[in-house]
Image (cartoon, rainbow, N blue to C red; front, side, top):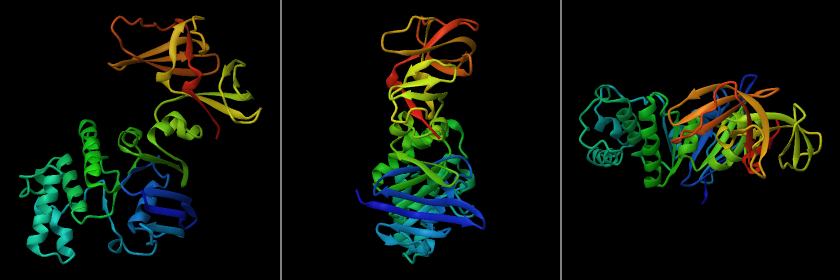
Length: 353
């Protein structure tokens, strides 16, 4: 794959505030790429620089090899879908979708034909005469997508486009967006603060915080092997067991317990053992399968989620979370029960700051 978007040492300052701090990033052609992070991390500013809505203070910004860092939005082969959709309320669906083509001097008949084709692609055929106020949130979002895609951009930029939808519709639209991206074969750059959205749809994810890129990898790599405490804690739920590296395969935890935790960090390095709640298992005290590592604790609280139970287990120096899927006939540990929490050494990651 060739690079659709390439950022080199891109920095954006607003006065004394550094919103994006010298990031390097390559987004491949045909890739569904997510910019993920908390509010204020710089992800939307990065998207706006790609769109041409903000210009970099420093650095190079290329789209398919062409430097575009100082070009206005209409001179770039991109289009943007915003969270509020920005549809024209006085226009029907067909006119909303065809608007950009008409502004590009495409003939009325040709623009309407292209608009009808794209309306069919986003599965809104038959609704061409409706106005945005007569449509659901999900339908309005499809109109916004069709309007952005009808111009055949090389890169589609999406700024939290699912944020205004309820949970069920948001989940349905996640699949719809991925279907569209695969069908059209163009790069989607998707800004979100929702970890599930990023993990569900993306080919790769860039995790950002405080204007910096912390990790760029596949969803599986980021979830299974986070590079630091922030990524481990931000992507899903995790337990961070603080400790110190004792040798290349052992970490001494805060309470003095030693656990098997292979690490490349130097002896004496302050680290945390990251263990996902679903990778841990509740055992009878001391009844640990061969090869697993364990710590002892007391069941403090149980949260019933329907398909699973989440246990809060109080240790000597912290509380751990363990998630167990509900199964017919499974034994439920009551609050106050002495238990061991065990895990396979391959289930953990050793992280630092």
